[in-house]
Image (cartoon, rainbow, N blue to C red):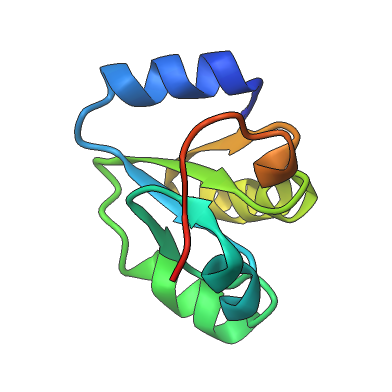
Amino acid sequence: MNLNQNDWIKNKEKDTDSIIIDVRTQEEYDSGHIKKSILIDINQPNLFMESISKLNKKKSYYLYCRTGIRSEMACSLMHQNGLTAYNLIGGIVDWEGEIEKV
């Protein structure tokens, strides 16, 4: 499901047991990422599919990438695997919250 930034944040705050996933590359993640996010690079399809297969189906996942295109594709793959995932429309480019750098 695609959510604008306000709805993505509101849903995430209500869903205290959820996880934020950055689906960009390691280099993109290192240059700045949303606080408390974990990296699962969708550009490495085998690793991505292996990683999501290990995720807890009882949790919700909040995904983002640079502009929202890769994370939308990742959400679709996660839904096909029985996971609940929400895509951040506009990605980190439009993000107005805190950003951490490695």
